[in-house]
Amino acid sequence: MKTIILHGMLVSLMLLSGCSTMKDFSNAVTDSLFTYEKVKPWQRGELAKEDMKLVDDEMMTYADDHIYFSKEAATGGKGVGGGGCGCN
Amino acid sequence: MKSIQKKLALASCTLLSHGLPGTAQAAEGEDWAVDGSLLHYAEEDRITVNKFIGTLVTNVSETDRVKVDLVYDTMSGSTPSGALDSAGSFATVSTPSGAGGFSASSGSTSVADFEDTRLGVTLDWEHTKKRVHRINYGSSISVEKDFTSFGLNTNYAQDTSNRIVTYSAGIAATFDSVRRSTGGTPEPFTEYGDGQSLDEGARVTWDTIFGVTRVLNRRTLGQINFSTGLSEGYLTDPYKLISRTLNSNETHTYFENRPSSRQRSSVYMSMAHTTRHDNVMHLSYRYYWDDWDIISNTIDYRLKFRYEGGFFIEPHFRYYDQTAANFYMFSIPQETYQLSGFPEYASADYRLDKTEGTTVGINIGKTFPGEGKLRFRIEQIEWKYDNSLFDTNKALVVQLSYKKLFE
Image (tube, rainbow over all chains, first blue to last red):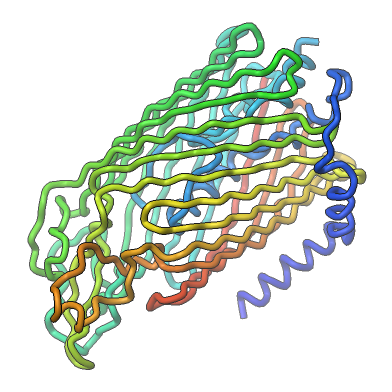
């Protein structure tokens, strides 16, 4: 029951957060996601925003890496180094 | 101007990630940055983890930056041991005396009680030369009751002259010591409860990574990494068990045994894109393989909806699958045992079973421009195992983080 409520809550929040999710995603694909253009330095304003970092939330990424490292057999890919853990 | 230059450089540079990723970006344009986080992780009827993460980043000069991370975990609950549930069905299994941090749970060996704490510290120093060369030196130490880890790493990144492409390479060495909370490690394939113990286990892991990051267009940044690593030494889990069923009433349970080397490789692709509605999408895919015959796919997707006042809502979806390790087995078949004794390696650890995992979650927060960022997320993870005694595991993740920037 707790799981159903939680899933319901998460789906509701996702829907509330913007019904345009799929539209945005399809736009992104057809628009410019995979197109390449020469970008001048003065055209990189959007890229310079913090949200555009490939790792934009270090706390979340670190916590996720630890969780999945301890629960799944596959690991790594993003980088090397960091503290070890006896959980796997 | 200096701040803008720095941001432009950061936008086009490789995000070499370490234990705490994003080293180079944690204090962009600021002299100090402090990031703190509290995390609660709870599995249904299993393990609970409470974690504190703290990070301090400071520019010590125009070209040098230092980062210190502190992690403190408390872990408790129970976890599947790999043994078949045999409560009341046999008398050949007994709990080791004075198991301390880890012991068989309530008369059954299929789950084991677990309690531990972990303290981890990492230190990184990054030096920038002529704006396009960056070298990072890192070290880490992590201590638990039954585990100690010490690591060193270095990463190098170089931008092309037009700052469109960044090439990067990194290498890391990690030295681990593994033991039971009572000391030592059990001799593989000895019967649980016999008390035969060897010295603590030691292993060394070497990891390398090569990456290319490219500005694809004015709204898209892409990255591809190839990683490969080799672990050698004690790779067995000193707590995990595996059973041999003689008949419906009699089971013997032994400590597992894994190979003493493991070579892992992966290709990781990541992308950040600002959509025409000014939302930011993060998409990544990882293909992983190793010489234990585990092959895995991981897809991670987040879409951040940005609103006025710095508020944001970010749904998250992750899918994961893996094949089983070539020595994973539900139990040691009696026919095989009678024919040729123990196999060379055997483990019933559910984490080596064929697995599918999904994560659904949402991250909400508010950015305070030039001052910091507050965020809160809640997620549910569900794993399904193909052949394990416990075929599912569900976990709830709740995390609250706050980042503060200082001039």
